[in-house]
Length: 298
Image (cartoon, rainbow, N blue to C red; front, side):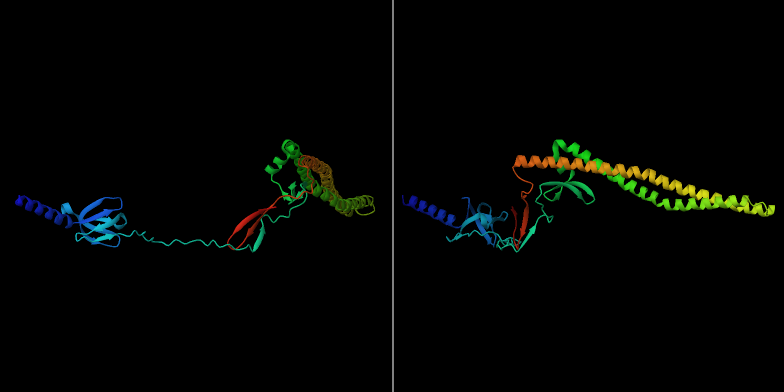
């Protein structure tokens, strides 16, 4: 009986000594690793498994370890540290400062007139609230009257082209009136000179032939010069005058038709919206400060 007690006591002592002779790693997920601690560095713990002390060396991150129980009974609780970043994060400056400058988004002056048709930049077109409208914007404004408006503008442009073409031709033809008058006078003088020489029979035959040839050449030159000036004068006046007259009529008629269509839409706008053509439009401005940009609508 005493021998049995001694044997049991010996086995219990060996078990306690064996258990306390190893290190234990307690992980944060609750797992326990029985091992032999070799090295505890800044970021990891190196160890060998207790079941294979001659085997390879393992490593555990300190961030995954909750506590280490050493073989001498000491305990080392690992503090969780967030690893430092390689690059620093800059925090934006969120301080607010009052705007020191106000800039109008569109510097074009805003008119009090809702819609009008006038010439700008060498072309005629629609101006809405003081801003020239593109082709697409004008089409959205006129909708069902767009084709009539387009035709009116086309006639106006065609009339202007006729005026710009016929005007210089008319002026050129008018300028040739003076050279033509001078050429006519020279032709009359040359003809009179020729007729006077032909009546001179009291001079020798040789002298008469010389005079006749000189007078004939002078007459022919004056006739050609008069004919050339006449062609230029008549051609310029004959082509320039109708182009100028019909161009003015066509341009004015097209402009008048465009004005009528615009006035029609102004009346419809005032009836539907209940506003007058002097209603103030809405517009946006951008306010720019040291650290902030915002928009206001009026």
